[in-house]
Image (tube, rainbow, N blue to C red; front, side, top):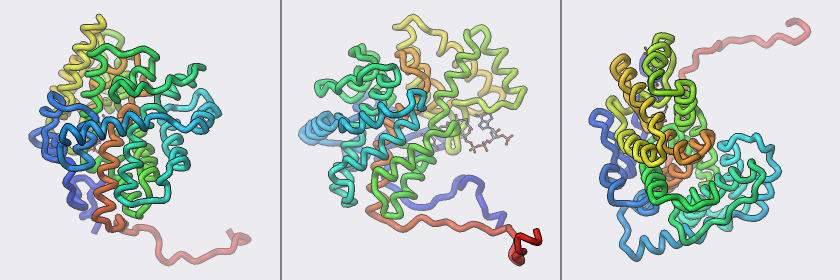
Length: 374
Ligand code: SDX
């Protein structure tokens, strides 16, 4: 039996899904059949959220109603802000997000309703409230009052506005919207699988998303984008990048932002994030981050034949916009709530409890010895 075990469930197919297709050999990523290369050019994050949840692109009337519902749902309950203000200021933003999402269920009018209609209503509220939650913590931990959401701004622009207190430039807002599109879903990645396992017990959306946030926090998954920028900070300037990365590889270090369980070529999202980081860098007069990462990518690809993934350039774009590194993974979650909710809806619609087996390798004839004789 042991030889049947696939460590980390590598390449194990556990069910069908109509939400996301990844071609690991060709480096293609489709949401409901639409290539992300088309979506980043023609769509918006709000429209991609609709596509993932309903399985089709919205009409103008449907999109307007969807955008309005999201914009109208951004405010947080006052008592939740009170909970945030009672957390230690040093609390890690991903832990605040995990705690805040869990607490939001207590204030949600549909808390006890797991019907599709109620789950969709809860999904709208979570997709709208999570950006407000992340931005509110950034202000509170700096000793400032949260900035109220601006319903006249789109989801991406409003998040940047609440985070910094100033309206973003058009390039910043567009960059952030594209980054949200690129992170929205990715089949059965670890955090989405955690959400589906939770939903498969017929538990609720908030519980499934809390499970997912816990999984996303890990540096092998969503936490990699923050680790990449720690590497960039250690390298400091492009001229030092080649020596630094060759030593890291010689030391057998795991290089964050590279490699993937499914892609055997470059992650198709990386090229868009690199382009955005380069455009922002030129606008801000900071080309060092992309310069460093380009050198690291050249060496790692040539020496290890492992390729950039979604996390390599995303942090550079966020850092150039002035976003703190420990907010990069929460930003990943602000996008992935779209995919998590889509997968919870799909799991609930065609459910069977997810319960694999283990091959037991421990003792089977243990005799109990009284403690006085041990
Ligand atoms: C995300 O699943 C998803 O879709 C996730 C995601 C999504 O959108 O949800 O795409 C988002 O999580 C992207 C990945 C972010 N994580 C990182 O950037 C962390 C660094 N990457 C690696 O830890 C690794 O590539 C994983 C975790 C992403 C995948 O690991 P696997 O499939 O378990 O592969 P492995 O660890 O078994 O490595 C296979 C070989 C090993 O060499 P050997 O020991 O066999 O000689 O490749 C090497 C590894 O050492 N390797 C790396 C490496 N990744 C793999 N060596 C150095 N640096 C790396 N980054």
